[in-house]
Image: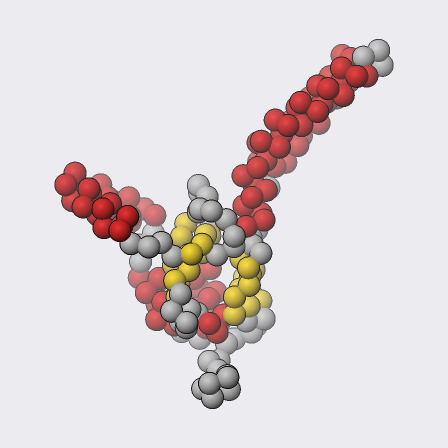
Length: 186
């Protein structure tokens, strides 16, 4: 029973799901930086230690720029579902707080390819009207703490029992939706 005396919905706590960002780009960048530092060491050391340190520091700034997006995705969009709790980045949601109706509706929404086909079928006037209506709507809150859904990720829109609409950025929309549906018992 919850605080209002209503029965708490059943949640399957055995369902687990994990979605970590791929590390390929990070590994490539780190290997390239290490090779560059070793190459520069052979060119500049032992005579020019200060020049080598400056080159490595400047290269490190470039490396941080190249790794900003993967680090951001890891911090804000890492997804874990375990023990009836959905963790997206820094945020935690109880699976019981997600409405079964919104999970069912999300399953019926088209994927990215379907949306592309739909936009391609619109005339310029219809597309302009659709954009105007979309901009007039308030966007649901993005779960995890980031500002926007990163490139290469899809949106999953769900609602809570309190009526709040939430957007979850995911790489595997069908996998996450399936795990949430199983956990929620829909």
